[in-house]
Image (cartoon, rainbow, N blue to C red; front, side):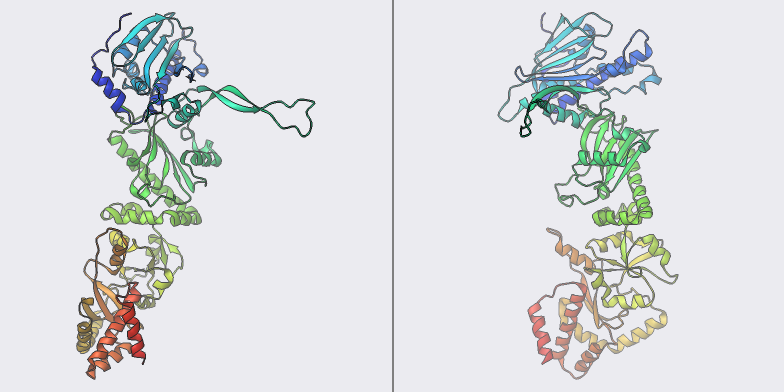
Length: 636
């Protein structure tokens, strides 16, 4: 028969289909299996609506047969098959989908119930990525005629009558020879094919069968001695290589914990059981099923650039994306799992998701569900939640601090901080419930450890008032508190801020008079320190400590410390303020030196107190050797 040209399309379009639409060549198997599954669906639907179609659904299957010697790969189904006209219509016109046409012709109430995968009419041609010629043999159900479609690519196709014993379709590919940079032979390896089926088509609803080699121990002869070694033989057996029914399609009550755990370990390569699983679904405007996991430990590469967030995305049981980042906010990037929905709008290759309303609706719903499940864990199993917090608490904090606090309302209730009064982690809600009515702020203090924070001189007077302090030991904590801003109307306040303890008018007046009386001493210290500090003030918060460091302006001491550690980050420096306790013995010694006109000693005392304030704040001494020498000099 004379060769026919493809209708309505040019060689350039077919070249585009083969070389540009699909990212990975292995996708071709997913596309062919999806088409075969659609053919099975169509026949199953006919059996439901036409009594003359005596098909048993359990007999429907998809068969994959590789032949290394001839470099042939066959994907067969025993579905509805195609007539001559359907072959020419569906395969002779690129971008025409038989599945799409089938669904379009259904009654409106039935179309919503019938789930066919291939609706773009281009998936079949992906086989040309790995095959240099393709033969399709098909026999329509109810017909005795079979037809053979053959093509070597864009130069056209032939269509001839042939013989086929049973209805269905065989797609027979001659796999290309290996090239310098392409290993096409792997698509003839049964184990490789089995792996691709598990990856992309594991949840196709019909059995996908292959003949696989296995090793079996030979029967031991009756006269074999006790020291005889076992003998093994290679056998070939037809096996179903897909799971068919996804775990997430089952009711949660029907799934055992060990099944959840086994799925997680196999799918996501973790050796430990997950901390918890979130099995959820929704129907309505958008229909989806999801199975999400919270890992029990931080992945080794979690805080590296190589780590990729994202959920596995399925459309009607066929994997579309290995990692879909748009379904998870960055603050929940540690979550692993799968989402399956028939409502996703996919592009022509089914590899890329169109950014549409359905995607955003699902992402928002999952975000809320993750939060609610974590809150439930926090309430019902605090020990397990603490384990989660140790693994991923820092990530939640970064989620609060990033994007100008965009996610603070989502994450605020999930945060934990060490409590000065409880001597344990506390939630912000629990802190708020314990606050005395007269407490003006939600107090926090930053430092390298709980022990070091507890010894900060600024902490003493606040604790004496009966106010609870949140001890923050991570670099990001100061940014978190500034992003949160307030808790039910109570502002967050660092104990290092000058106005951490508000004063009454009488207290302000008395402090002002006292500071004014010591103005000359404070000015002498400021002059001695020069541009090392922006100001020297009388402290309103110190009780027994001699000095401390605070900051003026938007950059706090903690921000300066954090930015100094960030590689390539913008270097920030706070406007440092040295606060002195006018009631302390060191200040009395400083005052005596000033009144005696001992300017050199005043300068030495000023440097000594400034160095002490730096150390208490966790900042490095600018010249440790000079500071050590100064201490020794003052001891003599």
